[in-house]
Structure formats: structure tokens, C-alpha cells
Length: 133
Image (cartoon, rainbow, N blue to C red; front, side, top):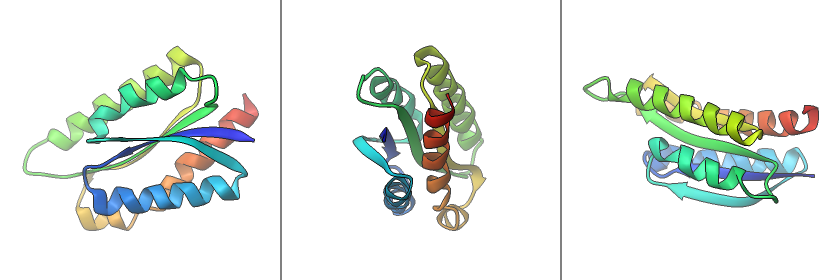
């Protein structure tokens, strides 16, 4: 059985709380266990939490969940790119699957709410990588 760590951003909680529920359901369907969940203030804070989980011997993979919505500036793009790069670094540095279940950037809150099911894809991807690697 695959043991997962979840990192869930609290910013845009109306979306991310639902994403966490979807992720837990997907884990159960994949016969995986969510061993630990770390809630972080925002998506930008996820790499540190993912790294801490990836260091644990009882975690096989980490799925990161969050929502980055568009504002008045390009801030969402900066956050999205920086987070994706750092999560990739964690995965490679720790030799452990770290999947990106982050909705956005470049979308409205309504568009993000329509995509909460993407959380299941992050969990499914994490489980598949553990099995295949």
C-alpha cells in the first residue's frame, strides 16, 4: 500500500478544502493511505512542507494541492512558476514522487472551483509513480 503525504494550501480555502476531500477519496480508491497532511498558508509555502514530508521514511510520495487565481498583477504567474520549479527540485533531490495538484495560475476563482477534481489526478499520479519506480 502506498503511503502519501498531502500538502494543502489554505489560501483559496473554498477550493482547497474541497480538493483535499477529493484527494482523500482518490487515495482510498487507489488503496493508498494518507499518512500525514500538512496545511500551509499558500501554494508558495508548499515546497518546504513537501520536502519535510519527502524526508520521512513512512512517506512514499507527496501530492501538493492548491489554487492560484488571477489578480490584478502577474503575481499568480510568479507564484505558479516558482512553486512548480521548487516542487520539481524536491522530487529530484529526495528521489521521491512529488505531484503538482495546483489549479492555476491564470484563472478565476470560479474556474478553479470547476477544476477541484484535478486533486484526484495528483494522487493518482503519485500512486502510479510509486508503483512504476
